[in-house]
Image 1: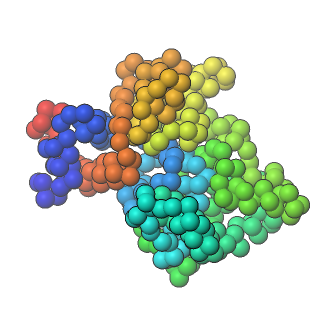
Image 2: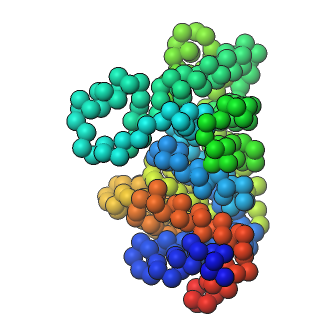
Image 3: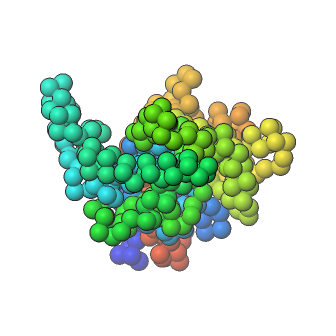
Length: 339
């Protein structure tokens, strides 16, 4: 049995206390929610695409473990960058010891460092730009308006296999586009292509209106949430803090109070963050605070994992993929520990 589920076995056997226990309990509750027919919504902040979370996130989407996403504009575009320019990335494992001069050299190499890796200017930004910009200008000429992610969904699915440098099975953007997952990209203006888009608007080459606004994202998300929360409901799995998480979790109280319509609360909550709990810190606030905002209830399964998401999320996703592939064996292992 353990040969089929090595990661699940490892977590169940070794993760007993502290953040390890929170990881184990969040994993078990996630799996039970999915088994009952529930759905899960992911909010992804930070630079997780550059950190190659797609290695496990894409298979999880394809396996039906993720049913909607909220991502920053950076995570959206960086998933595409990894697909088209993977071989041109450079890693800098000694980044902690860099001087300002060292980072200036990286700039001169036309690389943009993200912690210990870097995005290549010409192979990523400029290569994508030549495809995306005509989509914007064409939409402007035709008077069309689309959500920000729809331009990227169209591009990633239109790429020929010869244009893939990264492994397409590890591109979460491609997996999401193929599955037509509901997705919101709040604050997309704060991204490289948000800046590029603004420059073309400023130059009069396209209209700002071709990209629908964040307000329109929320207006559309009302109906998407209602559909996703049918049956056993939908859970909320958050990596990091900031707008990627803050924006979508508000849909519940907004439907309840602003639309004055009945709505189910989120059915599960888990956040992986290395932000410590502090006064006024949303990223570090405990889930209990969200009860007061009517986003969660006192019966919602809640978990906080104070750790590095690049370590925890792939481990959790791999274990969930094992559960999905071998549900009977997974349930027997969990039951044997009385969980």
